[in-house]
Amino acid sequence: MSHSTLTIPFVDFSFQHQPIQAQLEQAIQEVMQRGDYVLGQALGEFERAFTQACGTAYGVGVASGTDAIALGLQACGIGLGDEVILPANTFVATLIGVLRSGAIPVFVDCDPQTALIDLNAAEKAITAHTRAIIPVHLYGQMVSPRHLLNLASTYDLLIFEDAAQAHLAEREGYRAGSVGIAAAFSFYPSKNLGAFGDGGMVVTQEEIVAETLRSLRNYGATRKYFHTDYGTNSRLDTLQAAVLKTKLPHLSGWNDDRYRIAQLYDRLLEPLADYGIVPIANQSGSGHVYHLYVIRTTEDCLSDRSELQTSLSNLGIQTGIHYPIPCHLQPAFQHLGYEIGSFPHAEALSQEILSLPMYPGLSESAIAQVVSALATLIGSSQSSRLVGSFSHLADQPSLILS
Image (cartoon, rainbow, N blue to C red; front, side):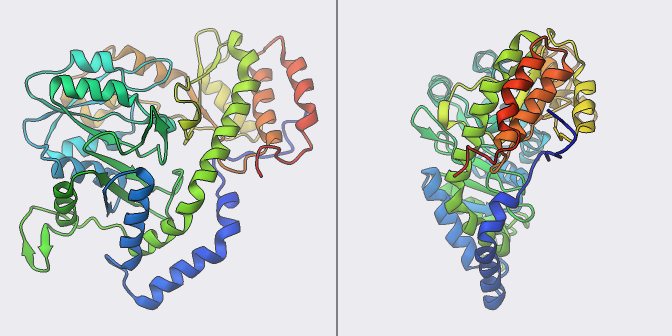
């Protein structure tokens, strides 16, 4: 099989956007005709629709996922002197949100198989000053709600979910955003539900949290020119809300496509486990929404991760790394007092993980090309057999997507 005939992007929005282009344009036109660009009609409609989809009572749109964490924690009463537990292997926005709330971040390590926060490590990190835990539903897979709720109940902790990568993810009968007191979502364009720019939302079961958030996002004003909180300007634009409201009815189907694509990746990658290519484990079944499909290049892999990524790029296959430097080792946060060796699982994963192309519309032939390229590059003795077994997919359109 030739690996040079097709460029496979890391993300491609065309499958999602082209079929609904007319609806997206109409939604934007309606906002323009009304002229309600800030806190307009489409924002309220999207807040209600997304809240219902998450199984929560309230939703408040803000300017970004980072603001959703910072303002959400503040609205939940988290602030100066409060310790908040979070995983070391998350996007830096989680940490920045904690710091902006005034709280003290307390990192813990992760499970090396799932990359999710290690709740046993979290329990050991609890002190008399611990007020909250932030489970990051990483890559589209939720942290176990049952274990979270048991931990929170035992130690009287608030659960504030970072669900930025987990739109409509499910586990143990819960949907992402419905486990704790509140949850933060991001609508960055590459998310499962993405805007045409930045955007975020906090969903919550608590009316007082929602009311406080509406004030905090709008200069701390409960009504015009009456400021009761030390707020900021962080409102989800009405235009972005209109785009998101138009895309939301399609999200469940797009997530289903992601899951089926992941299942094919899992099946085709299975022979490469003995050669050090191991997918991040899925413990949620079809509740995993696969914002990212991540593999580990373990110590059994004969190819260096960096070399492997470069070689794949030379073959036209784009990949990513989420994330190459754990939060506790980022230069800006050295003052927190952590060092190399503090969280060995997170640090090891940062050197092993590689995110493969994943998006609705990714064809079976493209997936086969990615896996056969990996097999060849790692020097698998089965590479010839694998390439041969994929050949029937090479010239076919996707068999996954309806």
